[in-house]
Length: 142
Image 1 (tube, one colour):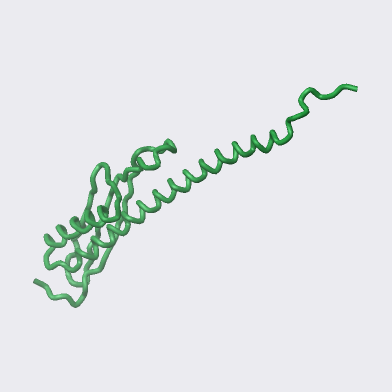
Image 2 (tube, rainbow, N blue to C red):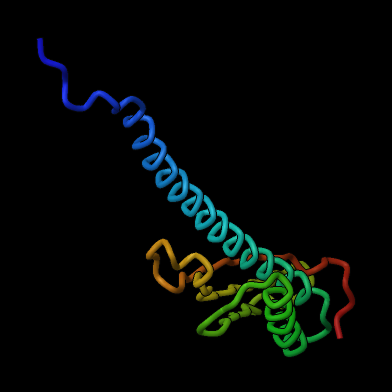
């Protein structure tokens, strides 16, 4: 009768599975962080576009509306912490500037994703959002 050479290997599979599972869960956690970061940046850009369009509709002139929309969009992105690495592009559409008309604001931001770069994702992702707001029908005209 021969005895096996390795009689003390009990629990080896459990130890190997623990190492594999820790690696799996760490990768999964990084993926969740990345997805959350992308969703937050996208939501912040969308919010900046809506706030800028709303701010533009209460201005007295088209020039003031354009300036105010750009100012509000930039301030909103700064406050929310979105780092636009290549700058923010704000396009303000004022072709229907009249009571009952509308203002269109498009905000584009190439947001930095360096805080989750350990996943090997690109350093920036471009987010674009457009918002349309109606100018009050009963506003006085200048």
